[in-house]
Image 1 (cartoon, helix red, strand yellow):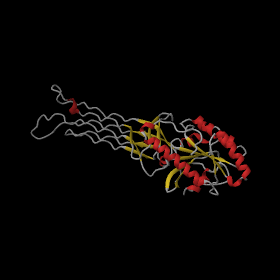
Image 2 (tube, one colour):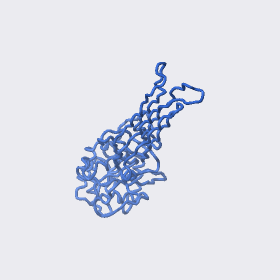
Image 3 (tube, rainbow, N blue to C red):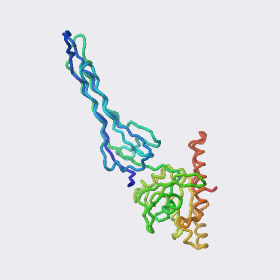
Image 4 (tube, rainbow, N blue to C red):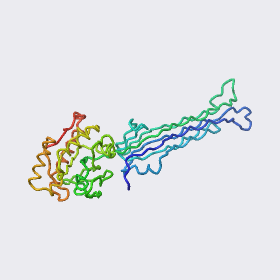
Length: 350
């Protein structure tokens, strides 16, 4: 299944049904009077958060959603039926944005949540509504009111416990494949990963969800390499795992560049708890590994883990550290006195 995290769709609620003009006609009733019923209300446009979806690919092939019109009123004072709703099923983590792509209309973060985005038009009034003592045979009706319409953007932000960040070719996909059953594309060139991947990671009999996003480049916060869409996928993560390529010439500079992009993007990324790991240590000598670890620790001001996604070196201990931070964040969120308390910024040390 192809991953799609953004789509533009057209929505229109149903028009109201017209009021009916009718007169009672029965044997032995000479002056039956008006009995035209009101029209039914148009259908609503509803956004529903559904389980089992993880992409917006369905909205690539269908961009127009229109609710049904309400039924017209009928004789014998019968009101028309309400039009059928148009229900859009979206994955957990989907944001509904206005046409300007900035105003958030709804944020779907819980399975089963429903939001009525557009209400249907009211039904018209039949001629029975206009009878008076002086006008016993009114021929006036009111047509149904039109529904509302608008263009909206659907933007999916993955909901994961931990997120992988780093420069292209830092070994993020290799690490995800090493600690989960996810099968991301892996190759020895930058930008192998073109869309986010999710994997379920087990640590000491427990599990958490890890998100791997494509590598960030300079200017990502301004949209370079569609970095704004990628950074949005780690906004909801409780902890970030920052992987730095140990075979690079300037590990400290690589770390600072990614941190600068996250700070410029906003969304609270710079304040999230972060664990820094020096990856690809199997390709370094002991002296090189120690020197680059020291340089990276000086840049981030915290302890740096030394790992190898290919060889599995240090991966198990790193997963335990991630699990500990996730547990701590869960306890903070569950404690009403700690709601809104800021997490530790920069690195994290047990």
